[in-house]
Image 1 (cartoon, one colour):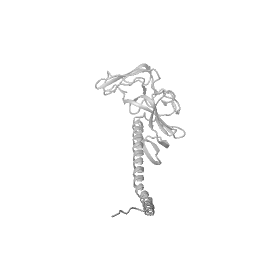
Image 2 (image 1 turned 45 degrees about the vertical axis):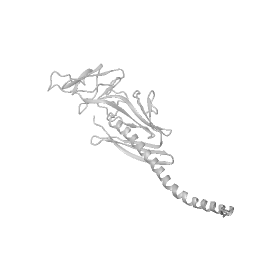
Image 3 (image 1 turned 90 degrees about the vertical axis):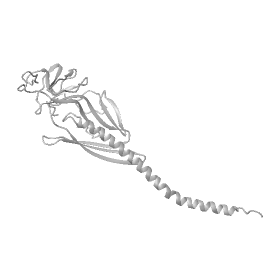
Image 4 (image 1 turned 30 degrees about the vertical axis):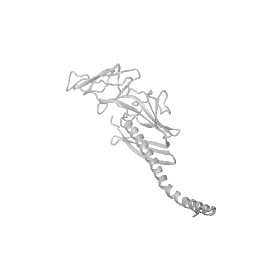
Length: 266
């Protein structure tokens, strides 16, 4: 008994029917995969933005009070990073033999409360930086020790000793007897679709983009827009910096906004 096969017409009809079915089913099956890919990309962008904001927040929380400043175009900001801080002794009433900080003449040493962390090489000592004329560390006012004056700490109990290689006269005592040791300025600058972090450069009077002699590190490579703004603090409240970032990748974008309180205790 002979076997009957497909005719050419039947084969053509079958191919046409399969093509029609595929044309209907494939778009329906592709949509979930597209949604999954878009969700994965947005999740990646959100995680990248969160890590970026966390890094900036950490540096902001370690900023010298009143040192945060934003560039004129809002595409970058700068701060002075605090390596260590404490309270200096201003009175010898309780410990007559203690070495107090003298504000009436140059002084090269003073005692501070408790043990203090080591001071990084090249650090500078700051007392009562307000950012105003005459008390501006960026301008090189006397509230900050000059370049080349080294700062060292001799740890002790109950008080440690800070020594300057050259005597220095600070113009204003801190109401809370605070001192700060700053090791480097830090800048965050958006440029050409990237956010870069700059450090290890000399303190400069004005915000520079990029700072001369700095070391840069890539923070995020997918920045399509950024905007920074700063509202300075007062005697009754902290300053606030607003960080706005837009990250874009593979046709997806996320927008994040974060407001960070800036310490201003001097």
